[in-house]
Image 1 (tube, one colour):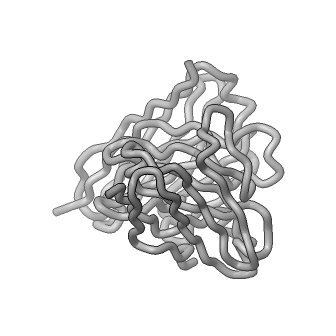
Image 2 (tube, chains in turn green, brown):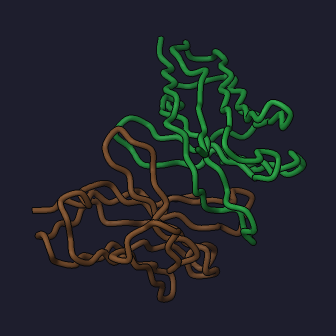
Length: 122
Length: 111
């Protein structure tokens, strides 16, 4: 079964840091581009970051640029999101999501994890 | 980058058809045939239902269809069923460093 499982969420004070993980199974992780997408409570989806299959191309949303860092370890079938200088507005469910293969532009996602919750509050 | 514009809510009765619009600019929706749609039930992860404007992934009901005209993409759902009640999001490629833009979401209520 194709699956993505996020972990690492939790409660953190403003200015703090968290590292999210996403473990993939059921497919050859190293062949796939990946995204992080978040959803604040009661709000819509917001794309956060993208990484190519080899990790050599990265994009970030303006709202997290300079504070978040995406990375991956293909040997461990895992995607990561290092989140620093966290703000209250970063409070959200964070999803990792797979980009389908052979897409010309990696803008859409065919497999999503169930998400991990990050709460930033004092 | 501003989110793509979707109506906050739409509603319909069982068996009817509804449409949900997704309006952007020539830098995103209007500039490329790279629009997708997702269905999200409460407390669940989003599910891909349309990609590249009008293509359905394997296993998605043919009651879902997509189209685009100018800067506006449209999701059509025919033969409404109770289980279609969910939030629907569009997303698009955007020609900037951001790469991906989502719509604000539309709550579909089946009356």
